[in-house]
Length: 50
Length: 309
Image 1 (cartoon, rainbow over the protein chains, first blue to last red):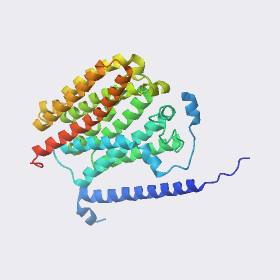
Image 2: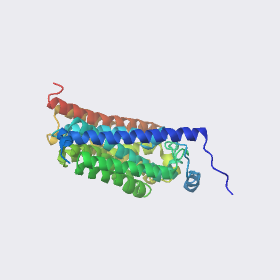
Image 3: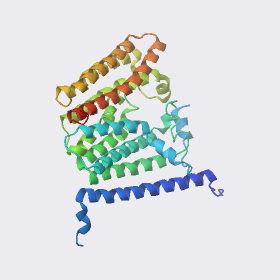
Image 4: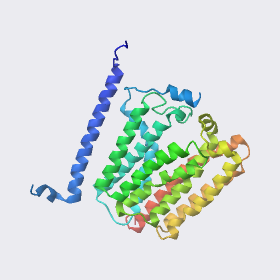
């Protein structure tokens, strides 16, 4: 039977930092696409009827 | 240590890697040169881009180059562990597992190419995808361990960024883009062979067939001189095709003479210690050369456009 894997403090800290970095990168990516869509298509993209 | 032992020593999972380890996987120094040459390619291209779209193009090219670096480190972890220059990279150091680097590289490649395709244009995205595949599959997986011509052909991967920058603005590839490509392509062999001359024992230990290890110092010195002369002449082609004026021409002549003069000194060196010292100097100057010749191209273009007048 194998011993249970336990996370060290350093691993937990680094995992948290990685998670924050991924969250920030994804948020920046979403914001970039939002703004770039307006830049490429103009503000009228927001006025289109559904 | 052998390659097999190095491969055994690579961890399969870590979980402890920090953000800085992932940044190191992106080869930030190589990325900075890629960003700079791509930026010059964009700046000298006719036409214009909205600043946000231009910044997006540079970001996507930078991330694509970084992703290619991560995939290179994933595949080369075994030989990286054997060379002093690369032993501190995150995978051989046990900070990141190869599978983690592979996933990171693939995801970033997909993000970079998709972003360039959706927000900039398809030609630039296709060139970026080709560059990543060329660097990872053709150079890293195939040529690097097979032939001393590895960096001659593989050098094309490093030569594409200004062409991608040009394509980001124009949506096409023209003679000017090929001229910028040719300058980096011809610069790569003397740059890496100078490194290989003074890091010969590293490449020997890793079993990489670099030219000095396979053909010897003399053959490498000859080749470095030949490529340096051709590079110095290629550096003048932007003037010959009307892409740049006298400011660039004067810089290209001066830089070319400097490059060839160092190559001649290296060619004449017979004492191994003096030869290695000159090779190290040549390597340093080659980096300055590439940076300076693209700065000159940018400055010449800005002057012609009246921005610096």
